[in-house]
Length: 322
Image (cartoon, rainbow, N blue to C red; front, side, top):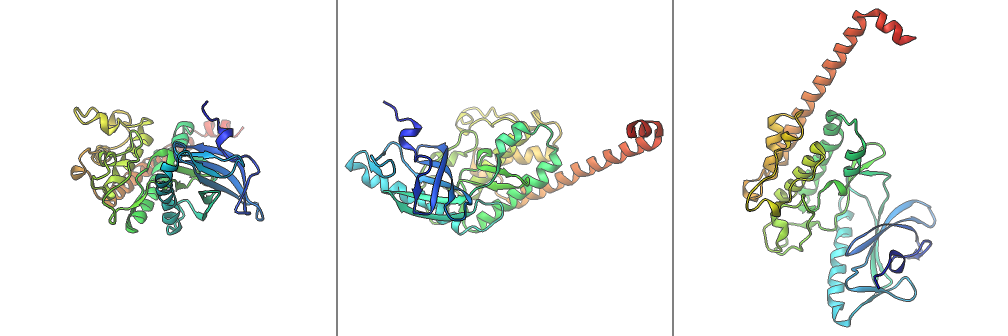
């Protein structure tokens, strides 16, 4: 019988490290379970991520401890746990307002936990779907450009995120973006073999191989795919479906308000061959900043035109006042 969420997840009120109390499950993947919890003393709400590779592990009878399904899988279990803790090691060293904030990580109950700051808001894909009246100038200034700065910051530390997509970007209550989930991130200069983690539509071709060379240009593909989604509300065609015949539609087919320069920039970032792809975030940032200025000037001009209309028609103003 397939295990239900209640069978494998920590129950409400479970206490770990004598410090954190579990409130509820918010996500489950092949390798982990994510909970909302809080610090027992401060009552501060936090995100708690528990290592749980469901193909290898079982919950013990105490409903807290973890057991390997087979003795022969212990080596793989602890190898994956080390990879799980890699996320904590990376975010602990990244102090940036647009990057998820590290709080704690530890081993307990035969497994591992990572504690991070809780942010109230919605992921970028949900934000794009639900916020029907987002102006492009607002999107560029308050979300896209800050994300470009954040990505530059990460790359300067020798790190690539490897899973940039709308679902891993949270739009905070104040409207600012927060980059989440560094579970796939690596110090790209120090590793030759990479575990395969892919997200359909957002991963470049090199993420489908353990031995393919990966670098900053790999994140640029995922970022360009995220831009494609933001401006078209469509997930771009997955790279695996573009190999024989590249049938990806130009972004301008779905959004006529962007310039040819910007559309070419996004499509360049989505090049299948990493050698033919744009390698410069500075260039991306420059193009987006120019585009933002263009859109903002158009908005200002339209506002002035509306004011002139109102002033030229006093009766309209008077009626509007009443």
